[in-house]
Length: 353
Image 1: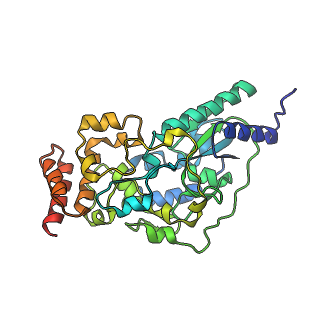
Image 2: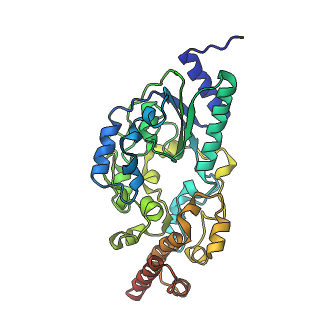
């Protein structure tokens, strides 16, 4: 039987393959991202990217896929659900001041590895059937405007928290892209269904969502605990509560996430009990334990010192107890100056209480 190589037929076949490989959604768009470039430049001009210099370094290339990967004709964007079904309830953990809150996307295996492997499998299947063609896979690993691409392809719409939302899957998913040198039929964008709701803005602990669709990353707890290499601004530390890696508050508040589905693949199952671990227990990890326990985790890339910095802030926000004070004093002379300063801050919070 001769393969129908029309753009429409190829698009339909690619989506079937994506579904067979476990992706929870797939859609296709061209290389024109509309006004995404103007919005990116305005965001950079405000300095809201903070210490993420790579955002400015790549500049407009982020909004020009065909410039990033010459020969690109179409973009396949895919979705992979990550919320672990067996994890402790997120709100329970957030309300437990002795517990450490880790963003639910990071409780399991590093999503970069999972997504990249599946995208490569999709590319391999396409090459096997269609013959050689130019392609490149991305998953939050290069200057690609993932949300803009996915919204353009109709995989969802950009929510007011700036993440991708869909009516059937909320926002609790990873995105990945395959830029291909093939002519595929694009999908149509979908309507925005946020309406007048601003629950995500109201839920943000540090008021990082300064207006609908506008995020000042410098105030975002995900940025502060992961991307930020320096001290956490003192004026934001109390608002961080017990969040030591990332933050899910805007997503927990979003009504559309009642439709989100839990992860269907074992890679995102909870590891190391990070859904319910105590701050004191995690603060006691040596650097060797940190590296060993978090091998294969996205968390490992922040390094042990940044991990301790984050937990020190959470311990400063925790209820005063002998265990908390003992844990902080044990790190008071840490060789890293930033860790020492955050420990000193935490101890001062308890001294003043």
